Length: 171
Image 1 (cartoon, helix red, strand yellow):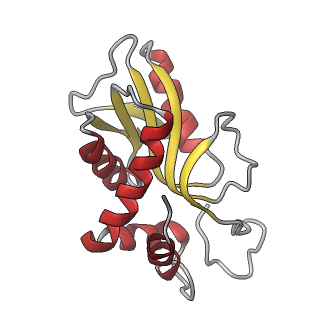
Image 2 (cartoon, rainbow, N blue to C red):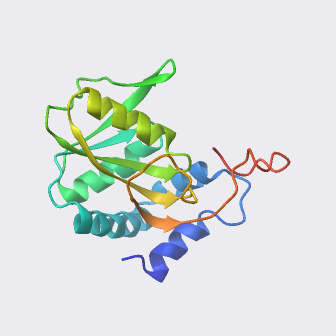
């Protein structure tokens, strides 16, 4: 699953930079050769747990690329939610049908707030959230997400709120 090569690709994009984790992850996904291995590996982990998905939902903007790539590999329709004012909404004709099994996919999960907001959209439309997946899980198991998060890598990094003197990480 996660090989030294894919782990190194992730970590090399994160270490030694003043950019936040989400920005580094986006930069990593902008490199098709590196993104491909990471996405293939994450998709394999997802297939082990969820072999019957109907839909992938990602929160904009960070989750769009990873959601699309995972959807392409799994041959699963992929949509994204966008913030309008302070709440996530489905726009652009996207919909979740009653009974659809939905996987929430993000680039980075820290608090789980965006993922949980997407979950509420799924529930409101009478779909079923089957789980959560991300490239980087930096929740330190303190997220409000009760399900196991499928991730490519878990990293314990204090959030910027805990270390305001060095604004390296996004929250």
